[in-house]
Length: 281
Ligand code: ZN
Ligand code: FE
Ligand code: FE
Image (cartoon, rainbow, N blue to C red; front, side, top):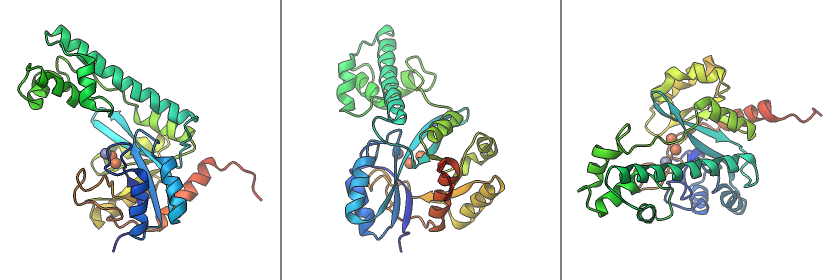
């Protein structure tokens, strides 16, 4: 039986397969009562999801998943209850990140030109087909021009991390993302933390609010281990499937992770503790 709570869903607004409305409808059809739309580095899908949630009487918690840079690799922070309005500082900040990503691709094009492989920005952009431009699109432009035989070769020779045409992508540090989420009125939760549990005590000091203890592929022992660490640091726990759709994340369905309903009251409580400054009574 599917869970009635799923606090980690992606839509077409980032790398999911379905528009927000469709995701909300699917969740309602499966009998879920609370979900969170948490697209990568964008809140663009939230208005549509909230609109649809009203029609199907399902609670949608506005959220996002921010990619952060850590020496060991990438960590993802979920921000719940953030102010998603397009005029709010969060949306403006996220727009700046997107612009910096496009700028990064332009610098890669310039480096390749200097390496004797002129490709144009227009060629790269055409491969991106409206998505935010990244290394795979640069690689495909190189293939199309015949400078390399395949996308894999483009990465192996020029675009690998530290390679001759590589330009690092701008990312926030985790502490900056936590601050950004808090400034936007949100609650900051470390996503799929199993492989990075050693950073939890440090991030707790930086203001982290919770850990995603229930997640696709985490068996009950793993979830219990993560929940115990959360208790030790005064953090709440949340959970979700990280659904993207059957093509992008096969075998992962909405509500397919068993998330206890109590996470919702803990999450609401954390939000009040952080942000509810209204006088009592
Ligand atoms: Zn994703
Ligand atoms: Fe993630
Ligand atoms: Fe995700």
